[in-house]
Length: 273
Image (cartoon, rainbow, N blue to C red; front, side):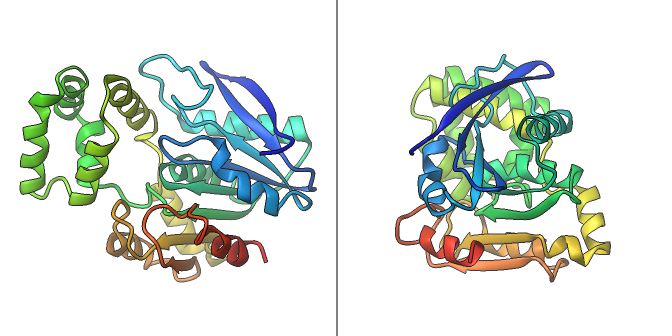
């Protein structure tokens, strides 16, 4: 990615790192997905280089963000980050783009600053609905305890994962994701820390209520999903969006990897005509 500048800003109890690319007058704040880094936005930055300035934020426990164990990204962090961006770069309105679980943070920002957000682009978004497994692992002591055991003694929990799958508490897509991203203790620890850091964020009840009464706010949201996505359940996603007919919904001929070289140009064309 060319002409990228790295920044860090102190927010409340931690530091957040982000990267700046582009020279355009419009601002686009970007959040990538779990296990990624800002380089996934290279094609986006190239496409928008003359029209936008991209602010690409590292997720908790990703990139240069070295958080303490137990760190949680809250609404206060979202507000502080946006206030810093507005002051540092002297803008009043902006857009948001987020992929997969990065959408949880973008949704929390949108909820707090709807009037200033021009557009919210959600790509294969996690957080529009919560899977039962995610709520189980992050929402109670038993789930968190099992996750801690899995970090240190993964063989003990593998049977439990298969059992939860058998009971349909854990869907097959989440099971595949869980098993494919936890090969080492470092990855298992990061997954646990990250999930717990963003588990309170997402498509909140208050945001849903606001959107139900303000169709103009719905029109600011564009959702892109893969027809064959094994991670984000298409039926549950569309069901969650059904009460909001003015949200733009775009189906793509792909799985979860919307950044595929054959697919992402379609997103760019539809989102940034």
